[in-house]
Length: 313
Image (cartoon, rainbow, N blue to C red; front, side, top):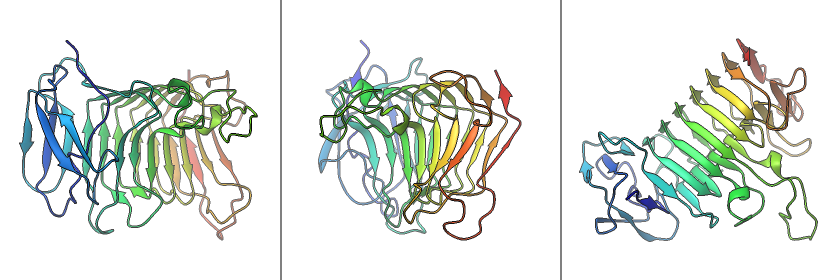
């Protein structure tokens, strides 16, 4: 019987400078009788709620050398282990901050399926010291967003993978399929429905999330712009990805509000990507990439987005 796990508890919740590296192998045929417990602490934490549990898979919990934490499918697994949020408005994994800016969090998420969540993987907060040097590889994020959670906990979902103050990450070879908000829902309780489709992104890199590599991913059925950067998230590389019915206005955009104190991002590169139509049809001319908000709010900056080698399909 295929086993589904709803929430990822804080198995990897100890500060990375204080604990050995951890490899947790997940089996598609895991058993609830196998139980591993962890405690919630600052550092690279998981599920909110203090103390939690996670079924231990057949492959066991393997303690290795210091330096990194891995959460991945068991060796030889023919299908991806499934984490199913059951459309109840959960976030699958929330990572807390590193103990200090010089200590990378160094988490590796590999070969898992995350489905029916309001938000999938949440890397960090908009608060120092942030997190860095994480890897997300060969994952499937499917049916993520408020459209799949009966608008819980809010009708405005934000991302399948969100980064805040999160840098030097590798996000490669993943599939994002079905990342959606509703076109008519009330997000602020005023009784008026809004079009919320553009607020959600497959990957959202915000608030000084820089030097990330986003490569070899497939984005399919995404109502908002599939990749979005915001507020000083600089020098990210978006390369060799495929966009299929993904994006409201653009496959990739950088955004800041017309007013406020956020800074535009710069130095981001959109290279050798394959782009089909957007979620609502063909993109407008000149909208394969797009920037929003003033370029000069924080002084003179380099070019915000450079696009080259796009293949239109």
